[in-house]
Amino acid sequence: MKPKRTGFSYGVGALAVILISIGVAAIVYSLGILAFNGYNLIAWFVGPWGVYTVIYSFAVSGDTTYYLVWGTVMVALGIISGFYNFVNPVVVLGVLLIALAVIGLATYMKGRKK
Image (tube, rainbow, N blue to C red):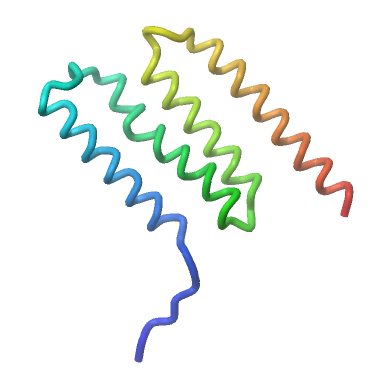
């Protein structure tokens, strides 16, 4: 008896993205392409996962708002930890708050139309 497949799972894709990202980071740091920095590890882990979550929210998910909000937060954390030397984290947090407000407003307006 074959197991029943229910469709694409968020967890499977997220795990694949995280493993690929950590693998690429290991190669980049071991070859000396980038100097090791502990803060950048967060960016390697959370950034691609956030991008995957945002794409998943539009492509597959029935609960678009949930995945879109968390994906946006993870992308912002990845940007802050990856570029903290170049970009003021408060600016990224400000953009994040604006994006979350727009997502919330769009969800509210979409709910009112139904």
